[in-house]
Amino acid sequence: MMTDFTQEEADAQRGFVATLKPGLVSKADGTVAFDADADAFLDSPAPDTAHPGLWQHSRLTSLQGLFQVTDGIYQVRGLDLANLTIVEGERGIIVVDTLTTAETAAAALGLYREHRGDRPVTGVVLTHPHADHFGGIAAVLAAADGDVPVLAPEGFLEHAVSENVYVGPAMNRRSTFMYGSMLPVAPDGHLGCGLGPRLASGTIGLAEPTDSITRTGETRLIDGVEMEFQLTPGSEAPAEMNIYLPGTRALLLAENAVHSLHNIITLRGAEVRDARLWARYLTEAIDLFAGRADVAFATHHWPTWGAERIEAFLAGQRDVYAYLHDQTVRLINRGLTPKEIAEELVLPPALDAQPSTRGYYGSLSHNVKGIYQRYLGWYDANPAHLWELPPAEEGQRWLRLLGGAAPAVEQAAALVAGGESEDLRFAATLLDHVVFAEPDARGARELLAEVYTRLGHGAENATWRNVYLTGARELLDGPKVPPRGGGRGLLAALTVSQLLDSVAIRVDGPRAWDLDLRIDWHLTDHDDTPEGGWWHTRLRNGVLVQRRDSAPEPGAGLTLTLTRRQLAGLLGARRLDGIAHTGDLGVLQRLLGVLEAPDPAFPIVTA
Image (cartoon, rainbow, N blue to C red):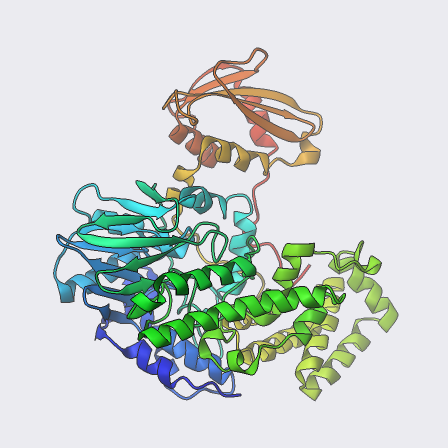
């Protein structure tokens, strides 16, 4: 079924003011942070290497420039994965969400000021704790008129620094697949991410909010602009909020309602979101705001104008999450497994026909598996799936049954020649066994790369396309990861407990089994706060345990006196500059000696 994008085309271009020319944002060292001009090929008709619906959707998300939403509200779109929103106040501007990096945020503000005047930033609002919405805050605060309020939902800082700390290396590696960071931007390569063109690279920062919204219905007056808030924790993020601006009858929906089906569980990995609760928040938004809003817009994609269209848009978004939740649970209680539900469940025709509920970012298939996981976990109750072999060992046994790699590849080649999607899916499974059993089987790797490429080119979902095409490239060329961006602002925001946790999860347990080490950490800054005072750590049985106290503990082999910033420097770069100590520094060295460095390029499609 071809999706009709006529209305979306008009909405995506409405309010256009100007584009950034050239559409290139550079970092301080001259390397590229974001290249919007690379997407120009999307103005051509869709080729055979792309799903036509995804091609059209990607073309709209790539539209770059400054757009007027309504009187006094502007957005810069197409210069990062997310949008930067500007609300004009009495003395300056309030920035809502700050893009991923300081480089793209500075470019977005520069484009606005070129056409609307050099107005200072008088306030910042952060809708939720995902990096593409707060990472560029350093550039925004640099444009501020002195100290300005930074407003966020309750729990923002905790979730901003915790989501990517404990499994950050694995999540970053998986993100390379989901967002296609290493794919060429081309008709047969990267077409976007479903939410926007792609993530920018550059300097990522974080600032502690000066004020938090703690309940729905709270209001704030920032630079003469009244804002009313709806808290939506547990929807698209653990802490999130919608914003209504009564002065302009405008409703900002954060990332709770965008022009695509969103993720209940992301392919990069995250906590499973609550589809039932998400749907209820959208019902609440309809009740609270729909009749009072003339325009609704989000931190991704383009606005929707008109009260009737806004209510229909919100109702469609609500219904798709409610339907996925309710029908998945119904099929769970019929005994179906996640894979079976993903194949059986289809959307009602009226929902399936709406462009805003199509799976360009999230997909029906992996979302219903996320709902299953939220209720029942990974195990589908089949004993055969309780204690399965690891991929390499399973693959070796499959090859013995099939008579070796050559017959298995021959069977897979016949499936590929058939060209049916079901055959390609099974060929991927079969060849995956071969590649894990015999990693050096070049012919199997090349054929599996072809299978992944064909599945990617046929995918309507942008993240699925990126995953398949990235897998194909890594089969042929090996693992590749993008250069690491500057994320020191995140490290500096970690609490003492989170910093010590980040050490505990790096302890190589078997190597530390026989160690018994005690270290006291005396945090001298803010002695009377939860961050200051004495922190006791003990490594025993391969486990690093921490607890806070008001006094030193007898028996510590080493006591370090330092600030939280020095603690971050010690754990990050192993610097002892300015840190006083008593006791044996060898205790610290023995602890550091059993810490394992994460592998940022661990293999995914090969053993």
